[in-house]
Length: 330
Image (cartoon, rainbow, N blue to C red; front, side, top):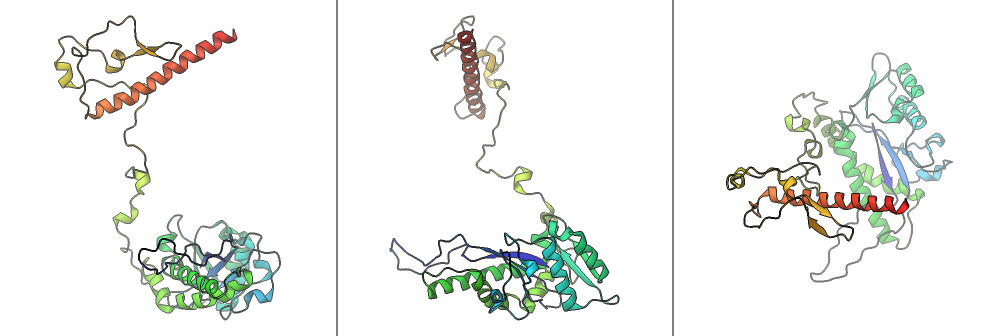
């Protein structure tokens, strides 16, 4: 059992076949934001599907909202929410629906695989399931894209087919806005195309649920994400340095000098006058550039030193401005 959201507008425009070289290619699409409708689906390892359970974003349920829906589609007055999302009360209503449809007993119980959504922890729903021979098993967080059968195989084709139906409707009815009364009619062909026995069987087979296969996931499936493992660039430079860190001169440059050298930052400390110009420190004698060991332009130490020096200049300038401001107030 799992939920998915369908909207009255297309999320992704379809591809358009056009003449090569044409600059402006148009397509009929809705400019509306659209309304969300939640569909609750359920299937088993044998390839059978339950009729969809629709949750509309409204206060009162009307029977004509289900015109053209797949046979057996349920939509009760208790399944209407202000935003179209599922809730604990909706989950309880769906449990009443599945118990009535499957009729489990003490000898033939029903095992429900659910995600860890908050609505599935509704105590009255859990109590009702326990009393009616329905066993609920919650999947671990962040694993439903690999373990949930509906997410693995069914809902991907369903959303694709529904998008096609929306595009066909907009082409056949230009200028007409799709509302909640059209959702069930557009959902019917998409649900019948995606809810086939082969998809349900593969949905349980790929995660290794049935037939049971504990070796279906390899070591690469348990590795952390690239962002957590530090292998993702994410447009962020890999070189990071604290503004107080000192950079030592390479050994090749130190050997070229006859006297011991201090750290590279201490040698390059500058002072800032009120006019904003940088001048050499007065207590340090200036030396010719030829006598100082220079870092190569291509070395990473040179790049890191430039970043550190620019940050140091900013800190010195900011400290000087703060002192001037305090003196001005006093």
